Image (tube, rainbow, N blue to C red):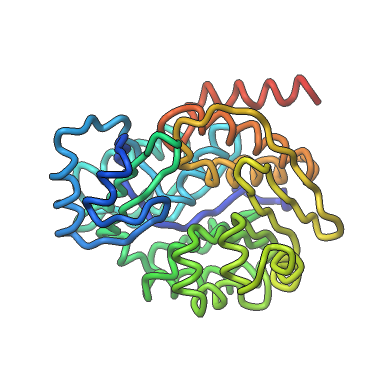
Length: 336
């Protein structure tokens, strides 16, 4: 970690209550939902979708959002983190806040009361092939703005971690850009997750604003990398060197490709029975950030992140319990 810091990671992202359902591909087709992607919907659409799912069992409900999942994952391993989100003064907002408190994650709500509105919801539809399709209603998260930033906490952090989903909101984009300025002025490293192929493809102009003159660490999957660079993967991994000092490309069943600033490191795939891939990328990023802020090499951070991601896809939901996270960490340490 950076010397004299309070937090390993300062994250900013959308706060969404995840509702996980098991569905078949016919259901998705009937609802006009494109399989495997995240789609932003309005309040009427999310209510209609939840009505269509009323006879389906909700497998799991938990606080979520991409960066939030990563922050809580790193916190379960033992990192001290800060999270800026936007919550409404409703039941879902209280549930979300309680989750942050339980995970010992500091937040802007330590000093700021929740406002009126509707806390965001993400309906996660999991199919038999363990693929996940997400329908997200941002609710009050769409109003995330610079007022949610805690400047002193950000200055006292090793990494400022941003989710690409924030490109969809003008006020959230302003918050990210102000946060990046603060980070650059105070020696805080920057990390960005591209979040989703749809987001990269359709909001590339704003994503490039987030990247600016370069980020210290970039997380993406193969499709996101190709959309950002507008090229095939072979050329994309070279182009990424021009915008990120280091990066991680997750490759699904093919493992992951890391770039540590000098060399590429191929992380092999492992045989694992996937039940739900929701949150695998978030878990990977959170575990990786924990590793590199707590003395692990780039390679070893990748090993730990792979261990944690393998564990999370073998269950429903985007996160591990604290007990499961610590068991993954102990098993990793025993092998090292």
